[in-house]
Figure 1: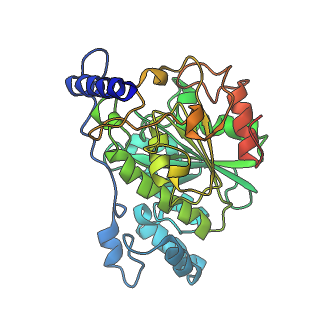
Figure 2 (figure 1 turned 120 degrees about the vertical axis):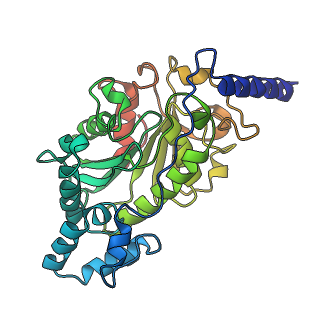
Length: 342
């Protein structure tokens, strides 16, 4: 009888999403940005360089180690969009390349401000971006924030609802660890817009998961510490699909609609899996079902899922988990520095 009721709920959810009524936004139809970085054709014509689409981050890193600093800078200046987005390229060189690429795009010049460490920038579509807070190569601990819906290069660091943006989450987490953790705000995939079909299906998350796996391989290739992932909302779907292949010591999901898995064991990861959900988060009203490609499955915060619980009694709403003074942020800081939630 319970399974029958859950099926009815799933059918109702599908009807709601398709119709775009009852308060759900009809946001759908986003085209995922994937494949080689912009400018790759010119790069391929410029001699014996690693193919951006087929070379692994390890191979990219090995190639750049053979180059002189002058040759590295030359490539960054001639092909900033490739060098700035290619996992395995030295970190400082990526920062340099992305400053060049951003300076040429008047829509995002704020991201080129002095002191910003932009590790990736792709203007295609709505734009993707990744920014580093702290020293990625010398920090003993590294965390990566993976955001959910409505995040792109324009909204990545918006001042409204700051703890619902990857920039705000990252800076809050770094402050909570007293600077002991380098944090990457990784808005590196095409996110859903609104709460429509894109948000209820896994298409964008599948592409995002591939990009996240490659990104963590790139961190390993340049010698950064194995990261802890903090995955918010639809970002937890990305992390769930990436879990088996991603290089991470911990996967923390918050405000999750599901990870496309029935249990923590089904994720097939050696990483510690954590889940947080505060009592006032509207995500609790989203049915934890998966039917005909709609929905994302079991609730990671449910006791039967098998994830470690993160306290979130004092967090508020869907975007309050990183707010200063909350028990969830305190627990996140502990996890980020190698400890347990407390």
